[in-house]
Every structure is written in structure tokens, then in C-alpha cells.
Image (cartoon, rainbow, N blue to C red; front, side, top):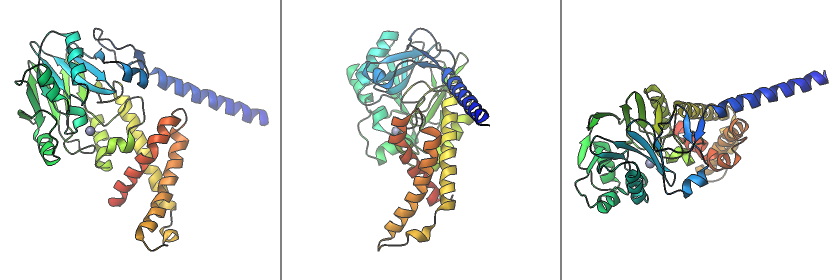
Amino acid sequence: MKMNKRKNVLLMAAVLSLSVSVTATDFIYRPASPIEISVDLQRVEGGHLERFKKAYEIQRLSENIYWVSASDYSVTVLVGKDNVLLIDVPYGIGKRLIQAIKSITDKPINAIVYSHAHADHIGDSGVILKELENSDIKIYATKEVKDSLISHKVTLPAPITNIISDGLDFEGHHFEVFSDLNGHTPDNTAFLINDGGRKILHAVDLVHPGSLEFRSFSNVEDAIAYKNDIDTLLSMDWDVMVPGHSNIGYREDVRFVQTYIADVQDYIHEGFAKADFSVHLKGETPFEWYGGYSDEIIDHAHKRMADKYRKGREQVFDIVARSHIRVMFWAMFARAL
Ligand SMILES: [Zn+2]
């Protein structure tokens, strides 16, 4: 009996390690190449620190489109027939983006597109105009992005010159524009470009491929809307993603986030079912009751998440997981979900 139990444990361990290694080998890791078009599930090799120290990295995604990364930010570069279009210009990397683009083409940059009003993703657009001494570069964004820049008093990015809504055409290339992503920010915009059959999605601050998500799911403004955004991404027809941070993304990465969020919500529901509000009714401030009650639920969900997700990614889990649960808990609590 003991032997059988031991054998079962060994068998389970073997199955588990097999499933882990199958997941790991799903992705193909290669050095970034500005020449070779990446294949499906190909990521850029190298760890986060290594990536951060390089001036920039370029991976060709299709005939005309490139993922360009610097300081852990990523942008989409489209080399058109005569000119170059750039989606996003993160703060602090404008000069390096110019160098990167010069290394792949002699064609000039004449169009920049903004994904959303956060200056960390678009703050160096003015640097591009200044460095290239070209104030005629067109700046495209939706009206929502323009309104957010005004209402948030974000003045660093170069002013928007062209408002876009459903689509954007650039030298024979058509971009579908999706402005119904509302979790990270209400103005967050995704762009889908079919280049020679490969469907490339630029959608930022939603998914960090190969990692758990950043703090509070990248500081979501609305965690329930963020969950809906993840579902929306999976309902769209695309092959490869430029996610704004980390590595090149695929549908598998979005599915991982979808499952992770479903688990966060399930374990919060478990905590809700177990926690007794009346136990925490003490002290003179109502915040003490809510503090004890919400901590009990969040602690329960955190322990359940740790059992499933912490092993093998302890460092990142311990930094971000509690913030994911907390932000989702309050979004669910406010809606009585
Ligand atoms: Zn953002």
C-alpha cells in the first residue's frame, strides 16, 4: 500500500513536470532579429535585466511590421512604401527609437499613433519631432485620447493633429481601431493590422507575456472592465501582439491572464462565503470593520492563489499578487458581484 502511494506520488510528479515542460516548450526563444520574420509562438530570448540593459531590440513580425523594445517598453513600427509609422513613443526612449528605425530603413518617420493618454507610453513623441527637425509629422489618436490628455492636463506628448475613429489608412496598409477597451484607462485603443496574412495587434498595458501582471493589473482604473478587456482581446482575430511591455505576446498569454483573473474572482467568492462581517464589528471607526472583513477575504484568496501560482515565480508573485486580489475585490464589492 505504501509502495503504491509512493508510486502514485512519483507518477503525479512526473505528470506535473511533463505538463510544465510542455507549457514551457510551447514558446520558441530566439535572439531578436530585424531581418527574419518571427514564427508563431516565437519570443525574444534573454531575461528582463538583459533586455533592460540593451539600447534597443528589434524583431520583425511580418513583411513590413516590427516589434521594437527599449527599457522594457515596446512599440509597433510599420515601414510603408515611402515613410515610417510608429505606434507609441514611450517617455525616455525617443532617441533610441530613432536609432532603431534608422537601423532597419532609410525612410523617414512621418506618422505617430497614440494608444492612450499615459505619458509613459507617448511622452517622447515631441523628442522625435525635435530630433528629426520635422514638425510636419502627423500625430494620430482617437477623440477619447485627445479628451483624456486635456482633462488630465498631460502636456508632454506632441499635440494630436489627426483624429481617428474606426480605421486608419497608411500607404496601402489598413489599421482597424478598437476603442472599446476601458479597464486600464477609458481611452485605451488597440490597433489591428493584417500585413500579408499575419494579423498583428498593438494593445498595451493589458498583458505582460511570460510574467504575472504588473501591480494592480497595471494600475487598472476599473478591474471589472479590465477583465472584460481580456475577454475582448480573445474575441478578436489576431496572431501576434505588441503588448507595450515585456516580450512578444500570443493568444496563449491572454488566455493565461483570463484564467488567472477567473481564479482571483473564484477565490474572492470563496472568501466572501466564509467571512463573517459581524466578527469585525468593533472599534469606533467603520473603516476598522471593513479593514478586518476585507483583509479576511483577501487573505483567503491570496493563500488560494499562492497554492496555484506562486511555485516557480515566487519573486514576482510576492510583489504583485496581493495587489491583483485587492483591486479586484474592491471592484467586485462595489458592484455586489
Ligand atoms: Zn498606461
